[in-house]
Length: 368
Image (tube, rainbow, N blue to C red; front, side, top):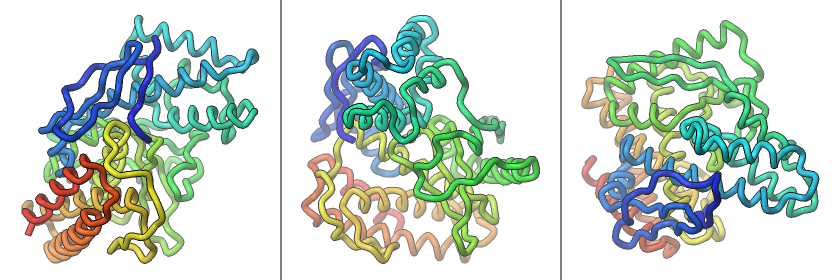
């Protein structure tokens, strides 16, 4: 999705710094701030870092984007709006009376896709989209997010994600989700998450801090048909990652970093287009057999830059399985470097995308 524009009383968020050279700011108007990415943060994001400061900056853009989606819905509504107008006004009032709650509502991971579905349905002459009635805005405003809280703490760093195993809007991750989990399954998730969190905090602290600041929701997936672990993220579900229960905590820690980086890059590209609109799928991805469009290849390269960094840090920390860590580090460093060379020569990147990929390539070379 491109840069957001427009504004309304429901919209708005904390402003951010000016853009990096060659990086356009998303345009503000009618009350919404300009959203830009300063040069230092842009470089840190390209290095698959950025930390909590970048999370706050990108979250501000997400708040404005979602407010604009709701504004577009309000303007497109027919006279009979299924209760949307009343919920919209409640949300507008929250902005002045309880800004934290207002942002929490707008940042519900599932709100983005729901609003987009409703807009498409209205454009087609209907009143719902994908089973998401317009009146569901009231559920977002008056109810809490779905899921079981899993309180985690290690060395003073706390994270309490919601394990969403019952919510009605979980089918956007490209993989089958589980049904409601029983008490034994929930306990298994709690144990695995505690182990993964300890690994992240003690061996990947920067990533742990960013995950805690960004990811509010985990959606349990079914494993692949062969039993192997899978994970996913959705462009229109900022703040959520999905994963099946893996065999060991280090693999869940890796999945959290991998999918968080997909979420982070998606939020950045809502502010700063890094590639031209996707054309035909013509690019080779070293980790897949099928050809990929430029945007998908960039997403894969970015997440795998984080995977490379993860295994590098595991080596530096004396990972129990050093052979695996070294093997995976080399594998993903080589694959990521090859994908970045393909992107650099694709002719499909914007000026900002060229700078982003060049910085990613510099980081990969530094890992050698």
